[in-house]
Amino acid sequence: MAASSSSSSSAAALRPVTHLIFDMDGLLLDTEHLYSVVFEQICGRFGKTYNWDVKSLVMGKQAPEAAETIREVLGLPITTEELLNESKMMQEKIFHTAELMPGVNKLIRHLHKHNIPIAVASSSSEVSFQRKTTRHKDLFSLFHHIVLGDDPELKRGKPHPDPFLLCAKRFHPPAPPEKCLVFEDSPHGVTGALAAGMQVVMIPDEKLNPDLKKEGTLVLKSMEDFQPELFGLPAYD
Image 1 (cartoon, rainbow, N blue to C red):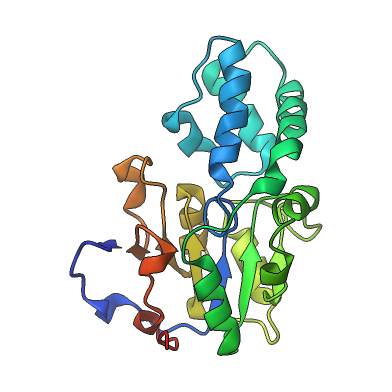
Image 2: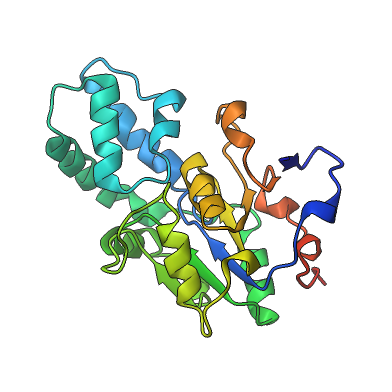
C-alpha cells in the first residue's frame, strides 16, 4: 500500500536499507519546468498544447523516446528528429540555470557525512547532465557514481529496471537490490525501481495525476519531509 506524507501509515512495511539511488530531473534538480517551457513553446507553434497529461507520459524517459511520444500523441507535423534537435538547442540555453530542489542539499550532505553510499540513476545524456549540474558540481561530487541514459552498459532505460540494477552493481561492493532505496518523481522511474526489487520514495510534482502517485513505497510532498530513520538510516542531528 502506498503511504503518503499526510497519512499515519505504519513504518512496519518499510525495510531498512544500506544504499540510496537518486533520480535527477525533477528530484534533485528543478529541471522539469525547464523541459515544460521548451515543449510548450514548440508545440504551441503548431497550435498544440503540451499539458500534464502528455508530460506524465514522457517524464523519466530518455530524450529520443520522449520526443517520439510527444510527436505521436500531439500529432505534430514535424519529424521526431526535428523535435529532438530543436528542443535540445533550446534546452542548451537554459539548463545551466537549474536549481536544487528543496531539501536536497541537506539530505545528500547528511548521507555523505554518515558514509551512506549514494548514487544517481538518470535518463539524461552525459552532455545534458554536465549542463544541468553546472552550478552544483560540488554536491554531485559527493555521489559514489552516476549512471546516465547514454551509458554504454545500459540496454534499456526507465520504466525498465536496468538503470537501477546497473547503478546498484557499481557500488563497491555491489549492493543487493533489496537493500537499495530509490528516490523518484516520475511514474516511469517508480515502475522501474519496483521492477528492480527496490523500495521507492516518490516525490511527485503536485500537478501529477493522483492515480499516478499510488505505486511508491512512500509518497512525500517534498524531500524536506523525508525521515531517514524510517529506513534504518541515521536521523538528522
